[in-house]
Length: 170
Image (cartoon, rainbow, N blue to C red; front, top):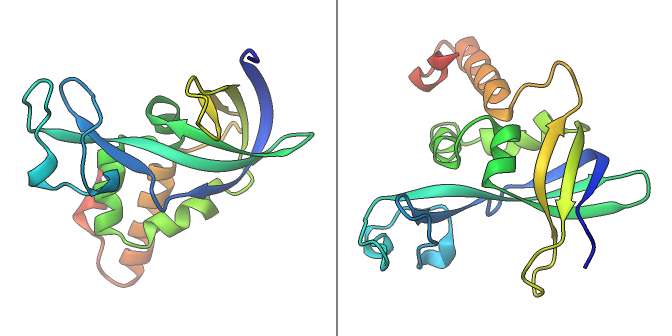
């Protein structure tokens, strides 16, 4: 098995079709049901281990990156993805519900972003993609996606005469 490798790469695309999964907010074990889409359903939100019924979302983001030698698809889980998105998966989920076009604008926000990533082989041998364990944006003016999206959504809404209350946090 290969050791961790740190690469300089450019972000090509982010797949947000299934970017998060539900876990127990106490023990962080994965909750069953709904193919673990980013949906809160009360029927399957009870944790069988700690009996908590308070779910939360964690990131699981597929990204295409290009290094100096190859194009790779990598998977970025919660801790590393929070660096890029600038908020929790719950907050991003609710933001995209209030601003439906925001999710489709993420690729435009991240287009060509230069990053230093530490990649590891998955412990599960059936897994297909290398894991991102650390990500550092290389551009000095980097802003997390949520900051840029709030500015874009508020600017577009303001031009229509309606700046939503969710965008007043910046």
